[in-house]
Amino acid sequence: MVNLGNLLARGAEGVDRDAVRSVELYKHAIEKGEDVDAMIHLDFLLAKGAEGVERDAVRSMELLERAIEKGEDVTAMFNLGVLLAEGGEGIEGNAVRAMELMSALSRRVRT
Image (cartoon, rainbow, N blue to C red; front, side, top):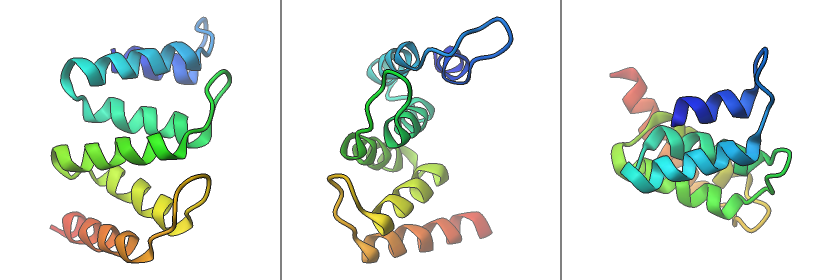
């Protein structure tokens, strides 16, 4: 499901981009098994917005928090750190939490 969602999010030769369908597939993967990869990919579409998909920074942040809780995913840690450092669109900046995430990320990457 996630791979098909990725293909539709990007498009490819012979495959039209379909961000709306991609979002549906990611949501289904999350509902079925709390798929961290689906959370990260859905976060990206929601954080940036895409054709037919409205930006939703708050939902994006929730997905990243869940992904981190599930397994301290380094991509989720980085993305959430950036989101909290920058704030905006319904997200209150939180420099302390952003630094905590980046420090934890640094420790994980070094080991």
